[in-house]
Length: 209
Image (cartoon, rainbow, N blue to C red; front, side, top):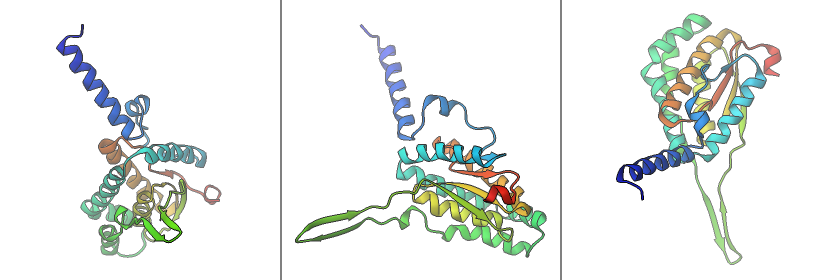
């Protein structure tokens, strides 16, 4: 016969396992997040991690997608001055105020609210169209607005259920990698999802091909 304490412990364990399952995670992945937070040396490593991230994301809820997107928007907006200055100092292109404004503009980029289910009915029946994700999408970001472009791509692509592998311009790689680290760590802390965006730490022409 189980005691009240045993029953309570069993219930807590079941609830934790259910939460992990709803996030598309498992016990091993939940315990050991990637210490590089999405920054990889090779394309193969970045793609493999992004594919694993996609497998998690496809099992996660729409609310988890919304949370991840909100986190990226919040980081870009609240840390715009710091991140904008880092990008300006690295790329030495454009004007600092424009770098900051581009990051703050992420607030206007549509996320999951842009997803629409289409339905058509008639004498021949009913057709419902819901769009499915592609999976892992490759993105190349410019030197002009490295992190704002990456962040905007994140919002659009993750909203649709995809993950991203980014090959940044070499002259804007440091700020892009810094953004990816911040995004992935905050998203993991909030949802348990990992590597929704990955990036090549030292990009080359070959890594972009």
